[in-house]
Structure formats: structure tokens, C-alpha cells
Length: 168
Image (tube, rainbow, N blue to C red; front, side):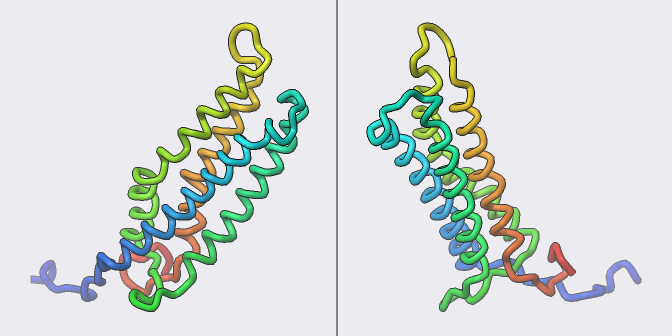
């Protein structure tokens, strides 16, 4: 029967060591990103006691600088060779793992930044939120950490020649 004849041999699935390396690298990058933002946001009022509106450009600049640095780090980390595993291939399982596992593992690290930004949004208010920009800053940081970092990492992986590859 024609239906039972294999066209190509099945490509090998990523090894456990490769997936462990992948999750470890992306998680480390994401944790470092959120830690850097949280520490800079926590230290900024002590360093610069001006009102929130006057400190906001400094927060935005620090966030942008951290985002650019983490995108560069993600690209370099995805392309670097491990002495035990070799290079990480870009395939559907590795890309899915990049997003799924690291989101579950590293996303709770953004919560301290959310708490700080919520505090900033209430700074100088009698009732309610008067600085929505603080919460938007956290949303932007969450988007970078949850979407941009894994996307840059996944697209920077070495293209695989396997049938399950995203790039042929």
C-alpha cells in the first residue's frame, strides 16, 4: 500500500539535554530582565526623590535599555554552542518549549515589578489610580518578557534540516 510507505525518515526529537539547556537559558534571561527592572524601579525613588511624573522618563529609559540588552543577550544565547549539547536546533518542539516552559517557570518573576508599579500608580493620589503610565510600563515589560525574549531566542536558533523545522 502506498499509504504505509514512509517518504522521509522521521526527524529526531530534541533530546532532554537540549530542552533543559533551552529552558535554562531562556529562563535565566527572563529572570535577569525582570530582576534588573524591579531593582531599578525600587531604587529610583531613593536616588531621585522627584514626583513620579518627573521620574517617569528615567524609568522608561532604563526599561528600554534593559529591553535592548536582553534582546541582544537572547540572540547571542540562542546561537552559542554548548560543549555537551552542541547547538540548539530551531524546530517546532524547541520553539514550543521556548514559549511554554519558560512562561510557566519565569513569568511569576514579573509579580514584584507589578507590585512596585501599582504602588507607583497610586503615588500622590488621594483615591484611585492617577499614574496609569506606571501600569502600562509593567504591561510593556511583561510583553517583552513573555513574548519578545522567547521570540527572539526561538528565531535565533540554528535552522534545522529536519521535516519538523519551521524554516526549510
